[in-house]
Length: 207
Length: 207
DNA sequence: CTCTAATACGATAGACGCTATCAAAAGATA
DNA sequence: TATCTTTTGATAGCGTCTATCGTATTAGAG
Figure 1 (cartoon, protein in one colour):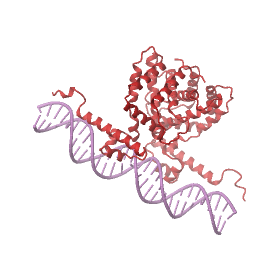
Figure 2 (cartoon, chains in turn yellow, cyan, brown, orange):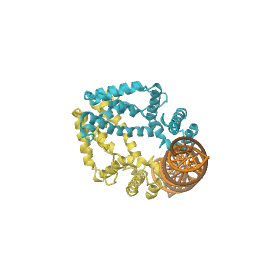
Figure 3 (cartoon, protein in one colour):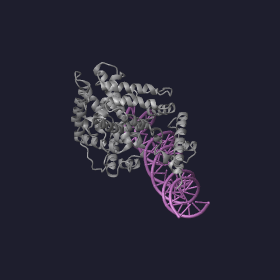
Figure 4 (cartoon, chains in turn yellow, blue, purple, red):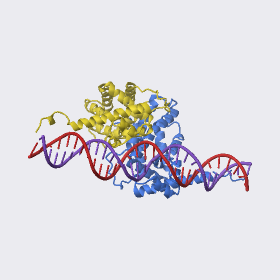
């Protein structure tokens, strides 16, 4: 038995991670240069130096190149490490701030580009909204743990829905988006709005 | 000048409505019999006795056959006809109950099938979630009218987000859906849950 | 180092959703 | 009837995605 296995992930895993990263990087570059719709899988595969078939081994659909980020894992971790005496909403606010602080400038840029594509491309936006729905279930589980109630509890799920809802309201654009590709998106500002929305919810949404 | 033009919609419009209805009816029948994914546009077009090209003239995508219902128009109308002294949430609750009452048994059945497909088919569910996002904007406009504030107002949009969020939480399944196609869906029960969720929100979401 | 089993890859073929174009058919107008 | 507009069908084509199969690479054991 050789000793190499103990160290890190094997050679195979490293190559896979490298290929995956290459595909994503090249895809985003092409999206920037030509736009999402005008970029084909064939082009992405060629740029990443893999076959088109290999693309689909790493990402089930074209949309997943954009959407499969690991950010929600970070958020979830940050949320679970909040002190239990905080109220659910307060814990989320603290976790969000913490998660934002943990992102490297590169990751922030990646996040920014993802968010931008999410707003601009209908298919991607739809998929992102679907993940909001799954977020309700996750949120319900977290709230259930903190309050000692069941994740299926109606009021627990309802609170989770309201939290996700107000976060959505900060993400979804108010006016018809004026898609001059110039519309920059400030990640820090987005998080500030989310925090403000949650604070408003905590006060009972007075209008 | 003949008198026929004065009466109702012309022959052209009637044929169009008929074709549209035929496509939808046949599509839903095939979805029931074979499932959504296993049904092709070609089959739907053949069953409705039109060409595949004509299908796309009536519905931009396959998903739209399921999703383009006129229910939200009904809801919107019911909402605007609520007395202005009601709070936004109370008005929505009253409007929902009223809208449900206005549906014929056929329309309820159509609604039921749509909701079922929406939960079962990922692509459709994603599209439906996207319409929830647009619903936030509509809701914000309605709330703005009722409260005399701007639709772009942060707190107005936030309240709209929370309302749509709790409605989502009643729609999205809690547990992993056990998709034995047997899982029936009771429309009246769904509306009851929505009403309960809004009442809970009105009380400030106590847990 | 060699052999074997497991795994990833590339190449190919094909189904399906969807778009574009153009000529034919049907409805409206006079 | 004659003319103009709208709707339709037929055809061709692009791009996403699936399935299959032979090959190459890696892991693990003798």
